[in-house]
Amino acid sequence: GENVEQHPSTLSVQEGDSAVIKCTYSDSASNYFPWYKQELGKRPQLIIDIRSNVGEKKDQRIAVTLNKTAKHFSLHITETQPEDSAVYFCAAASYYGGATNKLIFGTGTLLAVQP
Amino acid sequence: NAGVTQTPKFQVLKTGQSMTLQCAQDMNHEYMSWYRQDPGMGLRLIHYSVGAGITDQGEVPNGYNVSRSTTEDFPLRLLSAAPSQTSVYFCASSYTSGRAYEQYFGPGTRLTVT
Image (cartoon, rainbow over all chains, first blue to last red; front, top):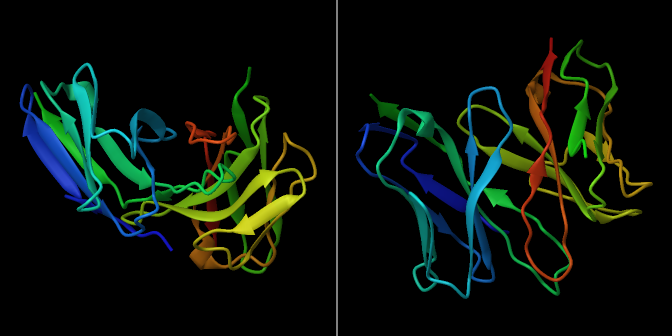
């Protein structure tokens, strides 16, 4: 089955700096790659996702890149702010005929943005 | 819309007791799933369902049962609780029709087994 590895497990940056979180996946059939943000004591919430027919996607200060050949994808956060502090999870899913939405998650990255 | 709701928010069980975690969604989502979250291990898929009457196992199904009698509800049953099942449990739902859709998570249930 699918296996997703995520690095680093913790990341500390100064406010205004950029942060990069990297994930690799094992199943070459995976074609959907979302990123979730989880604040302390809260539920995970989707912040951005990318599909296998796209190499890069950007939404304001957040961007995601996908390299299907190498089977890795990354989250980039620019101009970090203290409110970006949270745990970030990557995930991967494959779809066969659109019958499932089975996400396998990485182990998470705790991002701390120092003011 | 209430979105995805879970009850209870907190629960303490003794080893060997059974209980059911409730999950409901009012978005007419076909897909529903249960995850457990443990420190340093991310979110691990327990069971999932692609529609009423259809369920399947995820990464860590042992010790848990599910059923899906309606589109709205997807309860998770612990048959004989063990301390290893101490965790935070999240239910999630989404559309599935032909492509990937955002999964919406419930607020979670924090379970402690003593």
